Every structure is written in structure tokens, then in C-alpha cells.
Length: 126
Image (tube, rainbow, N blue to C red; front, side, top):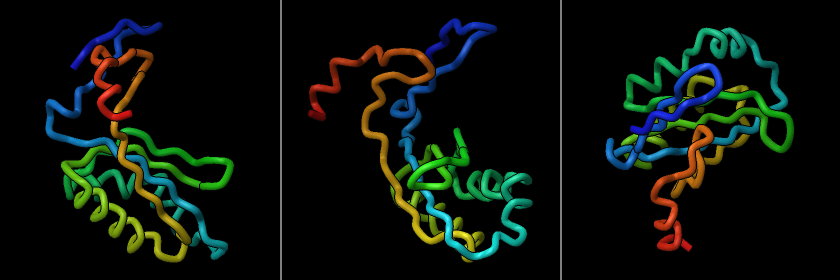
């Protein structure tokens, strides 16, 4: 973990590799069916709690404008846990979701305004 001075305070940048965790991005496309109680579940942070129960830590959850309607950024032990979270999400919001894509964040160049101190390792991936 690295602390960096930000305007108004400090920001911790966690090294997920040291914690044996991987970072994922999930993009969700909404169906054209009525939302029903979906908004209440979003406001109540239902998936944040259910995700934590299966080892998924949601770092960011955002409503989007564009090709996708919702985005989760989260950490998990591995892709199996990420897919388990996707299945849980699909089950919980079955009527509201038409499409889900999971992306693995392979290498963060900059996170929380801090350039990765191991930036040279990017060459291994490209």
C-alpha cells in the first residue's frame, strides 16, 4: 500500500498483487424491461453486501451514459470469484440485465493519481 497526498487529505493505493487479489471491471447493459425494485436494491447497496460474502470487494459502482449502463470495479481472488459475482448479479437483477462483460485489469499504469512505481513492468505485457 502506498499513501499519497491528495488535495484535502491522503489516498491509499493498494497493491492487489501483494494481497493475492486481482482487479476486475464489469460492464452491464440494461434490458428494456421495467426495473421494479432494482433501484431500491442499488440504493441499499445489496450487491456490495452479497459480493463481500463471496470474497468480492466492490471499489467503484457507477451508472453510465453510453454503450453500457452500469459499471462495477472490484477485486477478487481470481476469475472464478469474479464469475460467481456475475452469476449472483444476474440472478439478483435477472429482469433488468441483458448483457454482462467481465474484464481483468492486467496492469494499472496510474491509480488514484499515482503512477505505478513499477511502470517498467508494463513492458512484460506488451
